[in-house]
Image (cartoon, rainbow, N blue to C red):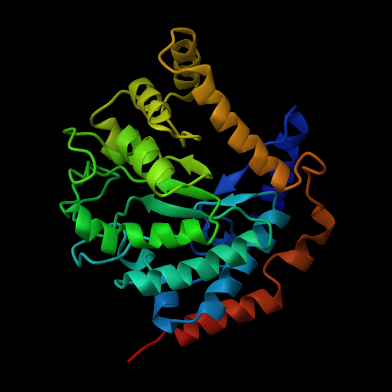
Amino acid sequence: QVYETAYLTNAVQKMARIPLLIASDFERGAGNQIQGATEFPPLMALGATSSEEQAYLMGKITAVEGRALGIHMTYAPVVDVNINPANPIINTRSFGEDPQDVSRLAIAFIKGCQENGLIATAKHFPGHGDADLDSHSVLPTIKGDRNRLEKVELYPFKKAIEAGVQAIMTAHLQLPALDSTPNLPATLSPLILSGLLREELGFKGLIVTDAMGMGGVTSLFSPQEAALRAVQAGVDMVLLPPETDEVIESLIQAVRLGQISEDRINSSVRRILEAKARLGLHKNKLVDMDILDEKVATNEHLDVSRLLFESSVTL
């Protein structure tokens, strides 16, 4: 609910010594998670409109409503290219099957978000569109060679990075063309995250894992081992690990034991603090609950959503 969310984000911010960076999955707008906020159709509907203007407005409205609720970061957009008709998990969450179109619409959405104070997150790196299994349950393998990955999967991520996307989410996928280690998800691969994403593609923003309770990780690693390997691979934020307290303690111990260097931790902390500073959270971390009705699910926002639903119908 809208008011409960704003009350909750204010309450936890008041408890925090350093302002919190609060994120949510707003793939279909704030209404994707919060009852009473504006909800949009899945991204494939936006792909059907082919409209950069509507993609920008969707990002902008998501940002305005998210920030009014005290949320600073969305785990969107999905920039996976939907080239496998048997994909059980991405399908309608993708803009479509053409890398250029996916990139064009994703960039418009990202700009709509970030120009209005919401960090956007391109996901799921290095590309989940060709999977025929669900990484929530198992570890899928993407079999494409490096040339195919460059042309299809990696293309929208390169374009999003060029457009200034501030965060990228990793995929629990195995990609032998990028890292031949057996049974190693991209989320835990130094070659894919530090080598490819940071060094080759030059990404300087936040790297966040997909949810660490998903079968693509938990079927192969304990929560503590998975978190350790993710941080060693170059991740800045470990999302939703099972056994959270134990995982935090194990990471502290890993630093003490020299399994993770303090420099590795400091570089992530610096990126996270810089993101908070860019959003101005050190100046004001609370939201004004008196103006929620002027910011969330306004008639103007609902009209944009309605038009997007209508214009997505193709025949």
